[in-house]
Length: 231
Ligand SMILES: [Zn+2]
Image (cartoon, rainbow, N blue to C red; front, top):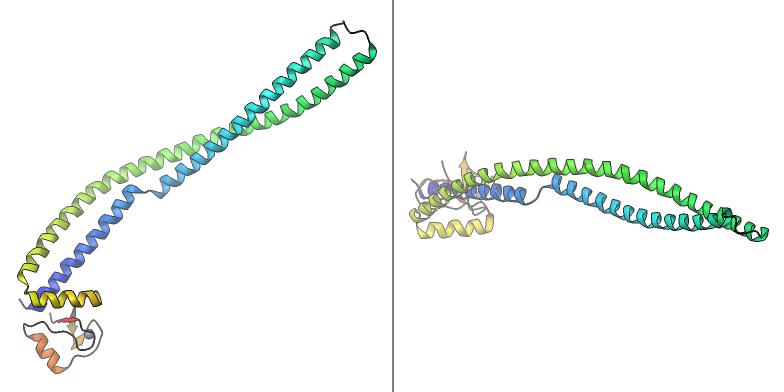
């Protein structure tokens, strides 16, 4: 096997390794993050916190209404208790009772609206919880599949790394040094030659370059510097 073929095969193995590493990382990311679930969860949390705020305001307002009711009850007791005979005093209490009643009615209306909103929100939160649960269950299933798949990828990677190690041991140091240097500069170090052209830069090779490339030594393209491989 020519030296160029060996470094070309090494490159193929390294590309496969990179590919599997990317797959592995993508799966790892999908295990750690799930947009659907995270969005559902954040919507649920926002809705719950909004409802908690509304519930708190409802309770405060309800306590205020209750205080008004007590106050109104006390005044009505005075009005209808028969103890107060002074008409002027009675009129004063009547006016006060009317004011309290009006203010109480307003609060009761607001409370009713709030109660309705709380009920609507409760139903919406239940729906969001269902969505969240479904997204979470989906994610769990996906995670389980992913873990199996990651195990497979890990095995493939181990095999390829082993293969790579064997290849590295079988290629001479100078060839490897050239390969690493070109890889560092160009990314893809070894390119095929087709119809007399370097596929790295598409430039037609000279007769002597072609002759050298047919031999066993590592030959680089005079134009782009990549290692030439004639298959
Ligand atoms: Zn070239």
